[in-house]
Length: 166
Image (cartoon, rainbow, N blue to C red):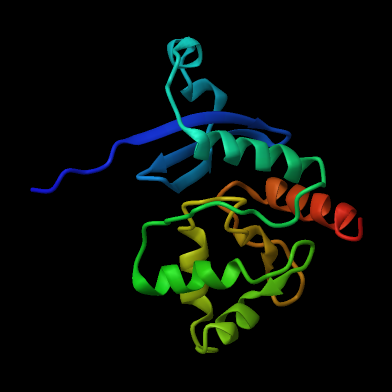
């Protein structure tokens, strides 16, 4: 049995709700929205030691939500299947403030028939916001499928649209 690196995490309050940011072995591995009620008062008052990567992630999120950061610069290591990782890599190529539909994303990975598989992979994206699955919409322009909720997806796209030309 191998030794697994320890996971460190912190909570970050976004304008859209609380997120948990996880780091393992010097990489961001998970970023997801959590319910405030799931975070006990003990966890909130506990001092959880974490390194510069988590601090940098929080700083970059501050800049993103202020409209000052359009591209994240962090070491990411999402855990998923080979296809999921290819799908998530393609999300990183969608420019800030722009959207693609699921067919366009499937085409970008060289498999235009994989629309449903792309949708499934995006729904399993473990690193919200940093890997921008919120930039993928339905073919008709509709807001579809976002693990953080469609209201958050709409607000993230609105935020990027507001700041994309600054």
